[in-house]
Image (tube, helix red, strand yellow):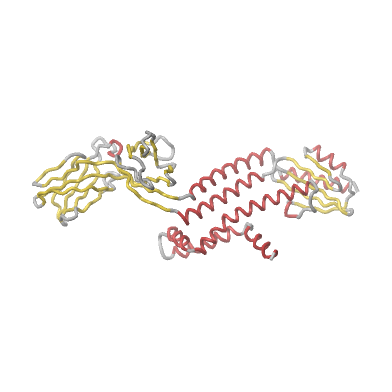
Length: 412
């Protein structure tokens, strides 16, 4: 039983596990690519529905957690060996090990190592020397980042939910759970940042009447009631009125159309009538963006079946009359089609970015300015076993270590 547990632990904590799992998913990806162009989407859908593949993917963050335990265990074992609290260390704890015949006296060596700036501790027939700060915190931050990244991908893949809604200026905000407040304004302006040329902002009044405002932009995505708010594309919510010689009572319809950018056409069928209305947003003569200014001029085509019966332009809030036909847009408002995404995995992925950054900065600082270097000398039965390990300035440390070995050999 213990042997089986040790084997399982060796597998879960192995550095070879992530490449093996990722290789299997790569093979699956290549296989799917022969049958569909939407390879990644298909792969995600297959994994989401297959418990075996989900369990296989879960091995990746589990491996990151196990490797953190291994790193801590190795550090503690080295620390115990330095102070003589454990049996002689195994070779895997150190980068180099040498056995030589030498007397058990470490006095000249201890003095020499202190002169090189090493801290030393002598415990019976053992001498340990070290300097600098261990990179363990940086490695743990890195492994924690790996764990958060892979766990975030796993959580996103298995529990992500998307609810697409129309956010209309002046209308209730369609937040999860309802009663999300009122959409006070939608603005679309030239951006001042480095990433986006234009900035979109949804300003929503707090539903409790306290006067607080929530602002949602494109980047970074904001969170509201446990869901991320992702604006997807722009459009116009409008009311169109149609009257015709064979439709004297007229017809009115509220519709939301994806009319942005200007020049893009969108159609709506006037149910119960033979007519279809096609609208497009026209660029004003001054070249301004109608979505930015809020002043919109619409081009339209009115079709009866497949026959074009009327075409023209009209401003929002106006009407077009000709040959007994009337096309009017009495009301229009800016609209943003928005995804409300319930995805807690995103938070873990963001945390991984912070952890990777912290790990890199800490690693650079310690590696350059305070590299950890360790030596351990054990005297047993007329021989000395020497161990060496360096996390930075390895060449300098190797020189000191080999000089120490030479000093021990010449003392015989």
